[in-house]
Image (cartoon, rainbow, N blue to C red):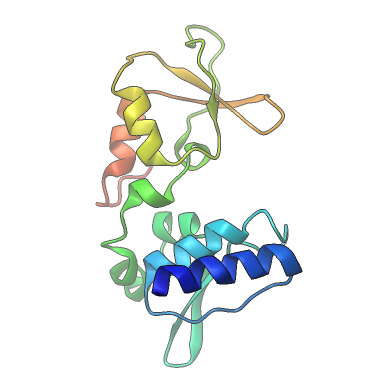
Length: 155
């Protein structure tokens, strides 16, 4: 029933094109709803707010919160979040390189779990492209594997 209610909320938001405030204690649920709304409302869509004692501690995209928790409370809150379900190619990419890029471009919005499967079959450094097809960065297997670590490794 919970999944059906989430899907219905997403459907309503897509039809109405309105911002929805949804309160949950489940970060995975918040991620699902934020991901579903991120393309609907350009300025505020896809944002999650973490509160403590009635005050906002951090507001941002799921990706930004997982990568850069504002304090120890937020870090503890997101420590068990599967990074592969949150992080995208854009968040972990390296600067573009001029030579030696593979021929298979990666969409910058592709999640880490899909990148893992892709890099299981190649040692190449691949270009990361934005929605217009412009190369905005590059990725290799090592960078993808480092991104899986939740021990504070900064890319």
